[in-house]
Length: 541
Image (cartoon, rainbow, N blue to C red):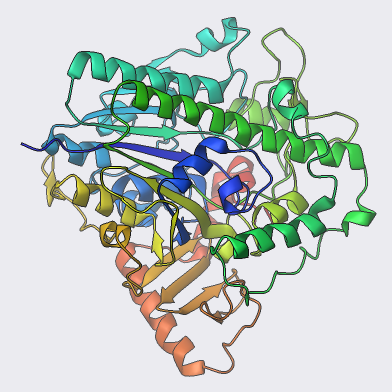
């Protein structure tokens, strides 16, 4: 019987569309670039604009609201907003058990509301044979909260290890799983989910990596946005007719940027975070190669949302960050007090800092699109997507323009592994799969696909063919022709009112079917929940 392929699914956190080298960026990512050169890049692949919802959709092939993760892992209401993966969805590793796959995970989970006590929504209880990583969605790279092996908290191990760095630990554990699997399980296929937190804030990186980027961004965000778009066009990823969006109106021209040394350092540390991740991906590739498994392993790489424009902290106290949200620690492992907030007098990077790189650099990261994580405009949902599978994808360096989104990943994996999607699981009826396999696109672009839908925090969209209807809550619907204007510069809603009416009706049908709760109701529930929830749901975030 023919061996089924291994699957390595790599997700990173809060990275923009054009940051990595093979998507036009200045950051050195030779390992991802090599995967792209030997595989396929997708130009129109989409996530769901936010950490937890994207992970839920990726793992289940459903829309987030159908899985219980309508916003994040806080309980904002019934059904799709309970903050936990529910029992009416099945994860990729659960489904792959029917095809005799061993399943491993290293990295960020972030689809369970219980952060310290194991529940039926933790990785081992949702299909993974082995797990190393964090349950929470963010935190120190030097000493992360909720660090877990299996179901056991192991934060003390990082606390005692002066060399611990979370990005490296995720990579090293992935390598260990690969080598151990080959030694103990031979040709049995495996599924491995590698979920990096880089480059999510806080800005933490090794000084040696940061130094590599000294001077790399000195031209500033205005000029670099122009250069990135030019490289994307020359690579055949974007159309030359699509205009660069305007600089975010809240941000100054580069010539007027203040605190220049600190501002550049923020982007240099961000780049170093991505660089460090790519180094780890290189070790994963080497482990597959050394164990003779690279040729028949499908490697998938993508990001969970567009770049993040949030400042740290926004409307929240240090006590809430440390004790309520559990996304930070007040002191370093050596007992030094952590300095929170984007203070230009403190250079980011070391363990005793907690900062983010800000709106202007996020605007660069999302070149050429507008808006960011949280929103459903192209800057919020567009992700790089790389497929590499020597035994299954013959074309090297190909680019695919067929649109797709997160539910398609599970559909594709089930297709190539010849695994059925279950109708029931553990006695519970399972919601039908929402994704469509991308396997035919491995051969060539197939063009149209079924309609795609999104909703997050009231921000919403539907795409049917070349048309995208999108709104930024609470503003009205906008309509764009994505063949002529993917950067969403020309709103055509007033010219095509019947199309707006028809597409919005299609959206309403989908929203009702998938359990989308009106934003006004969520805001009411948030007020009842208190300040810490409001931090995550800030309308201006």
